[in-house]
Image (cartoon, rainbow over all chains, first blue to last red; front, side):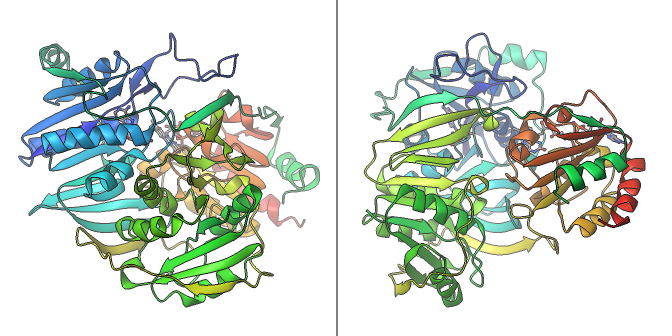
Length: 249
Length: 314
Ligand SMILES: Cc1cc2nc3c(=O)[nH]c(=O)nc-3n(C[C@H](O)[C@H](O)[C@H](O)COP(=O)(O)OP(=O)(O)OC[C@H]3O[C@@H](n4cnc5c(N)ncnc54)[C@H](O)[C@@H]3O)c2cc1C
Ligand SMILES: Nc1ncnc2c1ncn2[C@@H]1O[C@H](COP(=O)(O)O)[C@@H](O)[C@H]1O
């Protein structure tokens, strides 16, 4: 089976982001960009399935600006086989992304689509569920354990009340959570090899999808700052302040 | 136009996040209808009818709806949605799981995890782990929205007297997904998202056994116990303890962080708490920057002391 892994280029999770002074968005110029951390976990899972003989080919897909190629290269260096770049300067929303991925999935016919549970820039947590609905395939979100056998996936999902077990038929769309695995680092030889792996480039229009946004961002602002930073000297002082100053205990 | 709110429940009780979502709906303006979709959940529908500000309860009952499986629930919601201007659900793992499918069925965008209502078509939502707030306007005919519970007060659970109407529960028990059991965490304490006080432990706790020190203090304060990702990853506590960008979002009156460094992703889940206290041996730890009361100390000394100090009468 083929595995499709959508990977998004986002501001690196270690970067302390800055809101643009004119309130139009978040500064992304001269900022370190990386693969969305959840997508690294998805790529790692795909590679493990391939290593276990359960998959033959891993295709990494990214939608966005030209530089999203670098994100695909990272996936190829980790062990994906080839890439697809859907290139656009449009500000993408999950619905548009899911519609493009639907077209690619219909063409490639993967048995499994592994995705991140959320992109750490828009924090939307929508695209996998939307893609699953568009394709009419089963979905399992927030997966922290995965077993594949007999054309079925057994998954554990991390939910608010604990863990949920599901058995789902393939093909399916899974979104992965932090504890599914620890992604590997690409080795230097593999980074070199990845440069030769093919990346197909196309546009949303080539796929017949209109990705124009449905939402208008009127402004982006900084959240109110906390006035923290006050230290206490002892446990007794801490308790006293909580009791008599803040009156919370 | 009326607003449809999807209730979260376990077929026996309404979950508190539903009440915060009702408040968000009321702020949008219009009659608020509450959908209780489940199996043998008449008791929940009755409880829903008592929620203040709810004009009507829609009760959909079918075996396929018992566990809130997204593939079964979304079509029921989407069919009803046609008569509404807004569809709202809590931004919990329940709501986040099925709402994007409703949006697809209606071919509209979803607005995730709103933290404020500006007007009937304009909302504020946190992005980048809450380090920026986006004000977004939707031009879609039906607005599909999930609601961050901590920024809306809960509606009163009593006081309303809405009529309960039975609606079509559909027949679409899909054959692609089988529910195979819940492993509920056996936590007797107040729920993280509704607790008035939370005490959380991080990697500094060193082991699951050491969490007993936090539990002891939690007992004295009637607090919930939470954790950082590092503590969950290390297996000290189960996943549902995790507070943060990808765990639970909490905003209690008092949040006590113990042996937690204060990474951006952890702060994302708790920086709206009214009062933050922390205990950390590294005075450079970023948690001190957001703490109203920071104590630089070894937690293995400070926690037993704290426990004793709390006994010294209020
Ligand atoms: C995509 C993504 C999502 C994430 N989501 C979350 C999330 O939802 N929630 C979350 O919490 N994290 C999340 N993280 C992880 C986050 O980046 C941090 O790694 C994590 O929060 C660190 O946990 P910690 O503070 O317990 O551990 P550390 O950073 O290791 O800090 C331990 C602290 O304990 C202190 N300490 C040690 N011993 C003692 C002692 N004896 N007495 C007092 N203090 C002591 C140390 O000084 C240190 O400050 C996420 C990361 C990524 C990449
Ligand atoms: N532009 C994109 N390119 C590739 N994958 C994406 C893109 N946007 C979202 N995804 C995938 O969808 C997941 C969830 O994203 P979101 O719904 O935006 O939170 C991500 O972890 C990716 O796997």
